[in-house]
Length: 253
Image (cartoon, rainbow, N blue to C red; front, side, top):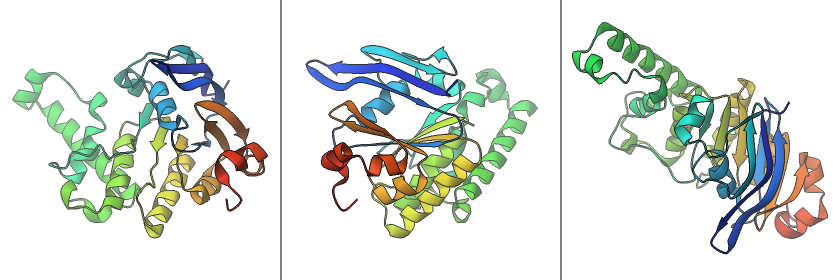
């Protein structure tokens, strides 16, 4: 059984059919990329699967269980995390505090105990800070352990957002354009990080316009065009697909 199964998924905004009858399955432990021209429906597809939007029709299953219509918090409890095209960083917090926020679902929400600073709460805070420290090292941000988020360069903030998503301890992570706006060196850093995430056993679903990065990382690729599934397959199959070349990749891809 596939980890994630999407069947005939659609969403309409008035008369606009943003995603139309898209079906695919993702096995555990792979890097699965979603590509397509601007406006193809890639981020909308992410928003449907991760609970931002409710589908007009179709089904989404995680380990055989329907998750269509679940909230992002409910999905996080099931091991689904994501990042966004635009940074969702709390700039008035420290870098390590941002990572700790990612573990909020594992925090003790008993406000009375928290107010009294019971030993269990203090112990949990210490454990979360240690986890956040290790995650920052994992994403290559060990030099920013004491930094405020608003003092960090953009490329580091992109990796910080990935660290925060990893703090949720996901088994499936959606990365929406993790290399957007980065220079060549920063893109290489993110490329290597995504591979480390996948090698750690987390299934990665990736939207990215950097085709060199996509072809380097991906085990399978889904191509969308005007909200519809245009093609799916290995890197070689997609690269050589004439419909994909015409719609997106071009002769220089």
